[in-house]
Length: 557
Image 1 (tube, rainbow, N blue to C red):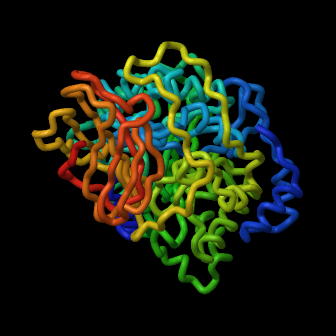
Image 2: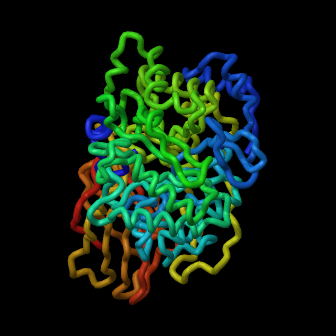
Image 3: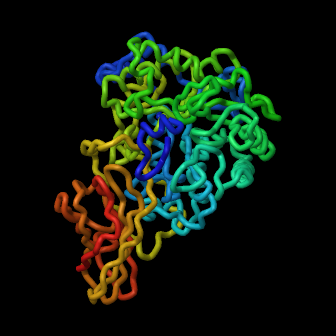
């Protein structure tokens, strides 16, 4: 999924290259019935019994199957948690009171065994986290002052502690946007390969990291096996895969498809693998290639098969032709790398029921897009409080998942004292998320180029302040405020105009009020309630708003 703010439209996507406890079968069937997404009862019961054992050691492939070191067949059940590929350079949701362990334990409890972790080459090189993080809530991990690469280390370590595996997904070269080819002028192929070799070497002693998703959604000019070096993704994936395996021969090499296939047909970005049969990726280490198409419903773009009179019965044949045949014929395993929907339309519900049945019947691995609730038109597996499970989506996935979602997860004991400016009890997150505001247009996962810092005008004798929209998406944004004391103040506040604001979702270090469709006022609270001369207070707020302000004029009190 393209993770841009604002995201490109689904039409452009298509045209340019567009889970702790095991539940019983009856419980799963009940969830399905409630959601209205029920598949055949026998299928639900069969899949409820699918309790894929934890993988032993490194994974490898054997024909169309993924197996562990004991040669037991294994199904990867993943979801993406994005943010490390965006201008924030940190997984999203940590700006509130969510902790890394809470997010991962919730994912595990839903029935997933793997997290697909997108990153950008730009974030790998960054020396600091760019986005807003509630460092107090996440004090156990000592994230303050750390690099995005250190954050990746932490997520992987905590995934291991929570019984999860990691697929590293090179989602894009630049944090601002992804690219149809695996390289750009700023990030040439040599950098793409050297970064992959660094990551493979960095985690080579830890089978928590099971795979390298070489490049997200090749599209546009990308070709397959045609011999033109500048566009041949099959050849590039061979070079990239061999380079990764030279550093760690135990990794799965995950290869996505292309948009424009050799027979002249087009499909989703990363979705076309029809040419693999004639020209597969052959690596120096056998038993490592996993093919990974992406597939979405009509809400993202009206592909021609959605208007076929046979829909949705025609879908399995579409999938067979584009990618399903690869596993069915024993060429290599399939990992459906992205699929998801807000399930807001009947067509999308039909698509979801069909694709879940297809994955289950063929015992295919998958990675659902996404855990994040701020993923444009698909939404996420949790509501906007980043905790409350989206029951309808989990019910739709129940035939291929086994788990009981949890909300409250204990945080590991702090490994270091908090910073001197943060000694609070964090503001509690809502216990239930309100209904999310629908996106006005199809979008993908969010993270924008942050708006420039807005600084308050001079004249207030008590504080000065800066303001920055650190994350934004269609329907909301996160703003970070840093107030500096010019003299002692027992209270302080920052206000700014926002003609699109509708709701305060979460806040930390401040309590915020709004005048709907007019303005926001945030007043220092908890550890940031008072401020001394020269002291800095950093706080933040997550708001529902159709558009983040750019350079708003601040009013200080």
